[in-house]
Every structure is written in structure tokens, then in C-alpha cells.
Image 1 (cartoon, rainbow, N blue to C red):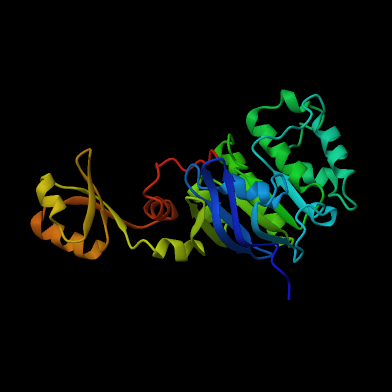
Image 2 (cartoon, rainbow, N blue to C red):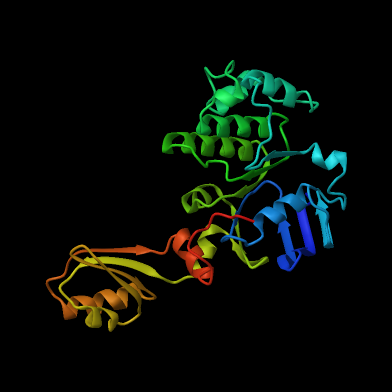
Length: 303
């Protein structure tokens, strides 16, 4: 039986009076893409730093690859990391950085294959400091993957990328997963998590609040989004059955309903002339905001 890449039991961590993590129990299975989601200050970055041994474990235990030794060299050599703060030498070229980082591992990826995979063709001889923000992100992904790690930890890897570059990096992540790598993806893009993740972990207030597949997370919030052109006034709209939230938009209304069918039937009875009706089931972003509604709507972690 393949052990999980990481297993946390009762892990807590404090910064002075701030409880960053509070009795976290979490098992990250091998061979999966796990998306780590949470609002500002949820504890995601602290969790990643503990997994990497960048902070000491204050309370609880962390096992990596079945071993209770997160700082052991054998474990660290099996992990590739892309953090928000890179710290790489910006006077080295992309090719030089790949050669340097590849020298740390016994079986690095072929450089040309990795350059193609990360979308860095033509940038091999450009210094890192002269790359655009998006190009730097692609280079950092390549550096994380150069050692063919068993586990990739990616902290907001597509920040600053245009839509085409984001999809190119998504493909690279899927290639790594298909090759057998496990991936922990910390992201504030819900479409990214929905597209890539096998498993989603939602954190809030330093605790794991919800976890499951993207579909399971969405099903925790039985909400439908309804958009409609209607002459009904606000009182009439809010009185419709199952409507939980109503917001006026140009020419009509945007509604959240716990039962879209009931709301739509009542709406059409109240306003037979309603038009441009659209009903969309809850997506991962809607579910995330509902499950963490006590926090600000921004979901980019600052901790």
C-alpha cells in the first residue's frame, strides 16, 4: 500500500497571540492533485512552511512519505517547491538556473523537454531578472520540476500569467500528475482548482473545515444562480420561494436560490413576461465563498 505523501496529526502553530493552525488532521494521498483553498489568514502558507521544514513543528506530528522526519534529506530531495518568494539568483540565465538546480538531484529532467513543457522556448539564455513576471513564474515551475520530484508543492503558480500561459502551465501540472507525481496546489483561482484538483481542502481559522472532490464540495452548497430580466420589484423578488440573495443587475436580477426550480416556477407565475432566464448550478467559487462566508471575499492568502 502506497503511504500518503503527508499526514498531519493534531498540528498546531502560533505566532504570538495568533493561532495560525489549530489541531489540524490532514492526509494528502499520493498520486493526486490536492487543491488547498482558504481566505486570508486561514493558515495555508503556515501549513506549507511546516511541510517543507521551514518552520518547526510546535505541536502535533507530521509524517512525509510515511516517515516522521520532515527535515530529513531523503524526504526533501523528493519534493519540488514553487513558493511565492523565489529567492533565485536573478543574474543567472534560465539555462544556468536549470543546470544548477538539476545538479542537486540524481535524475533531473531533460533540460530541453522541461523548457518545452514550461513554455520557455527562446528564453534559455535570458537572465532571470530580465524575464517578465509571467515568464518568471514559468521558470520557477521548471525549477520546481527539474528534479522529477515525487511531490510538487505549488504556491499560487499561475499568478501573473495571461490566460494562454495559465492553460499551458495547467497542462504541465497534468503531465506531472500523469507521470505519477503528487501535487499540492495552493491557489486563489477557483477555476484552476476545479480544473486540476482530484481533492480539495478548504481551510479557515487555522482548521480544515471541509474536504472532498470538487463535486463533493459544490454539493455542500445547494445553491443555484439565476439571472433574469424581470419587472418585479425588490420585495416581490425577495419573497420568491428559496431565494437567499437578490442583487439588481442591468434590466433585471441576479439571484441565489437553494432550490432553483421552485424559484423559477414562482417567478414565471409572478411575471409571465420575464425573459433571458438563465440558471446555473453552484460552482466551486460559490461553494467556497459560502463555506467561508465569515471571512472577506478575497481568497488570496496573506499568512
